[in-house]
Image (cartoon, rainbow, N blue to C red; front, side, top):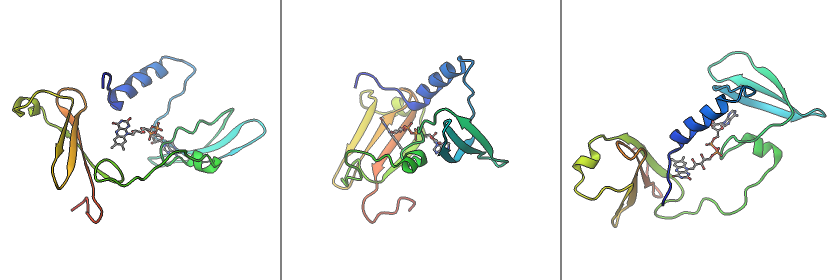
Length: 151
Ligand SMILES: Cc1cc2nc3c(=O)[nH]c(=O)nc-3n(C[C@H](O)[C@H](O)[C@H](O)COP(=O)(O)OP(=O)(O)OC[C@H]3O[C@@H](n4cnc5c(N)ncnc54)[C@H](O)[C@@H]3O)c2cc1C
């Protein structure tokens, strides 16, 4: 793949761009509790995740960018298209991810430097992808039926 970039780098760039616009009010650590549509727009209640009093918010629009289990999408009855939860031996259903820092990995590895390594054997496939091209990696293996990831 010619272009790859980890979300942790993309988000920093998006954040600095968003902060550069004075009309934006960016707040981390707040959760949307519920919302309703009114004649004038949207009325919502947000709460600080670290505890504290709820705050009522009135807005012209509400954007449901709250992830795969989006409460906004569910409340509005917006369904997904396509197929999901396909069970495969590799890359599907439940995955076991490990994020690791291994500064000497590339030095120790006797193979060519790559952005991703895949292991294949009769028991399991797994892959380890570079996050920063240097020392941070994301390892993923499928959790098979009947296996306990914690064990
Ligand atoms: C382990 C893993 C590896 C992945 N690897 C890849 C990959 O290599 N390539 C790829 O393309 N995709 C990958 N994905 C998928 C990708 O991360 C998602 O598709 C993408 O992040 C979805 O973006 P999003 O903005 O819709 O939701 P998210 O990134 O999930 O963002 C939703 C945000 O909404 C916030 N939120 C949720 N509920 C509330 C609430 N009530 N109030 C306030 N805020 C709320 C959450 O805290 C979160 O910040 C991976 C996902 C996982 C879990």
